[in-house]
Length: 330
Image (cartoon, rainbow, N blue to C red; front, side):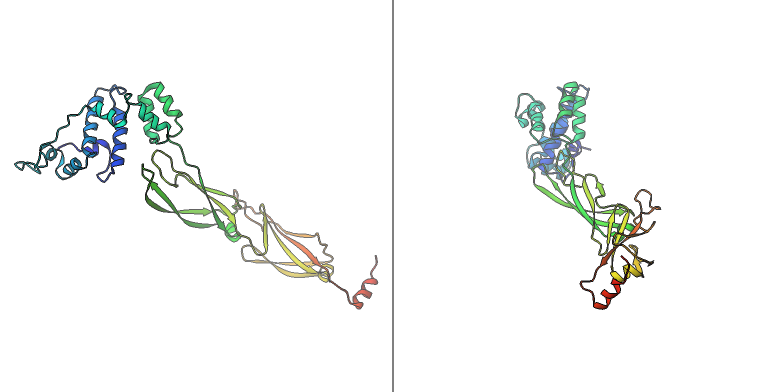
């Protein structure tokens, strides 16, 4: 079996030129003999350089994909006794010179570290490996680098929920789209994912649910969290204040003086009878204890349902009503 240059660089066979170059840079930094003192570092560095020399050249890569390493070194022949159509390949470059020519600096690490400082960046796991390989100075450099492992700012989205669903609880399925960018800054593909939010009974307006790292993906950066914030839809006749529910009822002056009976609709769709005798003042409130919203942390407990009354005074009085009222004590 010949060498698998894709495996050496740790890339797929479908890898782009940009991905291959980045993989070479990462591996070369990891095994560079100036910094890596392990016995096999120099041989690994040479093998990595050879892999990039082949895969970074479209013609050599084409022959390698078709014929493998042995066929490449025979000049494109596909098997024993089948000579290639050109001179065989052999890696004769100095790996150090190759590394330096690619990154354009006499200090083989200066250029790459500068790229980190100016925003190109590498994955966080690579920074951690390089920090260890370079010793205390390198560790300090990579740990303080503002680019490696930087996380994008969170993305906030609203999710609108009715009061009825906040009372009973429900599940919401939402489609999340994110874009994956290449190292050239151009979008490569759009990904879609369906996430499910379990709305708990008693959740309030403003409750947040976080899905970590579902934002756009960029090389060398950590994807943003997506934060969904609960927004309560207005209810036609109920208002919420904390765990209590308020229901306003308009009554006539006659009912406020003589009393009345009626059905009060609850948030869960049921209703409760309400009968009041005697005088009802405009500030009076009738409280149904334990018929409000469930408490999010202890859903077996509930707030109160409070009925508020608004007394509607007549715009004018008939003569008969006036005489009747005049007979009342002050």
